[in-house]
Length: 363
Image (tube, rainbow, N blue to C red; front, side):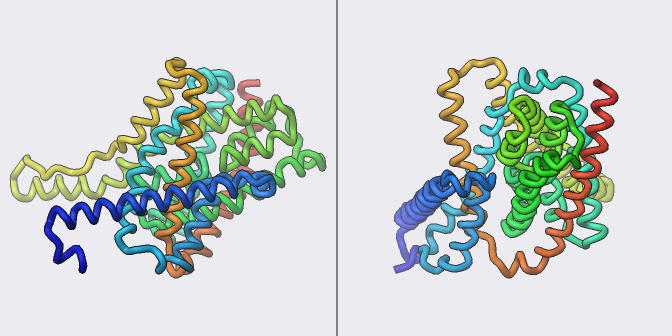
């Protein structure tokens, strides 16, 4: 018997049960992913649970998806959308204004210059040179510019783009971020990268994609470099909010123009209500940064919430992977990776130039 022939109340209960089962399934899947990510060999590669989650979810979604009841799809979608927004908001508990103040103007200047230039170059190269759609170009640029997979998730929520576009952007983050984690320290040891401790911290924190990858790379230099690199990286994370607000306004610009044009054409000033460009989870992110900065919560509580948040982000990534189809990736995958490569070259060469300039200016 299908839910179409059931009493409305019974059908609603069945639908809710299916959604809960879907969320529970994603949670169990994410728990397994977290265990895999904690294995020494996986952790040594700098692969966070988020990245392992989207890969494992995509494998399941393309190979074994038929084994999942159709009613669970709503729970998977909930995890990839609503839970994602909540988790991105709580990501702010990892950042404090005091930490950002420790690196001062040099760290802030490095972060702002890297983020703005990388977003501009990535969007331009993706759309104009490699003919990607706007969303894929923006997602790839955001992952490289700000904070890897977490930025891709935040932009995916703002743009309301398709899951396979996020998967391609995350693929770029995995490939080039992992390469940076091993290549940068090797170049320093070989004497090809001439950076002092502060320079290494600025360069690593300003140009490497994921937080875990930044820590992994900088820990091969010195504890001082690791400290500076981590704070610079978290300054980039802070820039997620103003960038999201700016992108939200830019994306909604055509709709605003169309609404204004309609209002002028019919002589009416009562425009139809439109969706607010300000993503609420970005404001939640700012609120969590504020809470973490004034130390309202005990350290143990903050640590626990951060662990839960990482798990929620892992669930969201896993669900996005489950909704991703290989056929969709195949169409634009090489072009998305080429965009990631263009950005990687910029992050290395441009990042070195920016680091040199910042050290000379504020040194």
